[in-house]
Length: 239
Image 1 (cartoon, rainbow, N blue to C red):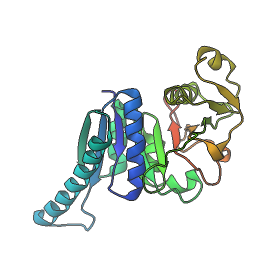
Image 2 (image 1 turned 90 degrees about the vertical axis):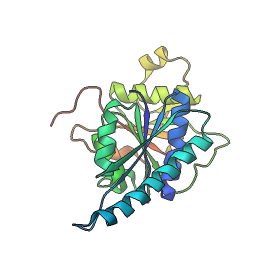
Image 3 (image 1 turned 120 degrees about the vertical axis):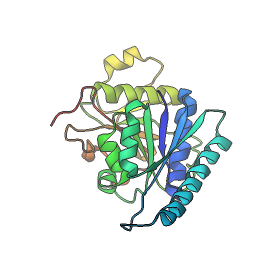
Image 4 (image 1 turned 90 degrees about the horizontal axis):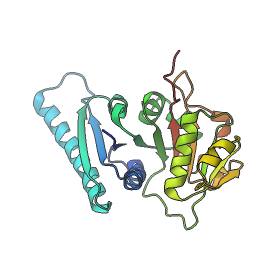
């Protein structure tokens, strides 16, 4: 089932992820699945205590879904409440998703901040592209949005395809240091610029290495100013 999957935990950081996920769902005309996971963190517990925690989780998920429905232009919004690891659940759902969107605090360079977190685990293991949206609160609306930046010098075909698709959907140029001549000829609706102007990017697109870690750390800015898409390779990864 083609859909956008959003990891939502009720925090200020997931508000930006919600905004971006709604944008993706509307641009692609796909349903949005809002996912919230919960688990009892204190060892053994009676069922009444766990029921209270589950009720709180249900409220968080309801709030996220209602925010999505009230601000969307009519896309279908579904919910997924899961008892267990949020990171593992997002990876499970990525198998039949077009895109996973998740928030991150984003206080330092991308690979360092998200590796080991829910966002990092999803980005490293999901079967579909993952967009990590960084920072709290609603996404600021740029009066003059910058380009989609392809931060790969020798990108995999899946990474290039995703970058071109995002640029085309958003009506933005695609900036890259890689030679995209053949791709540009096939996608004339997208204006291709040379260079990687991260400071004014709308979205940075990177690939994922075979070892299932985030790729091209050296090509990312010290403080990514925008969401970052991590795209799996075209072929299955091997160790």
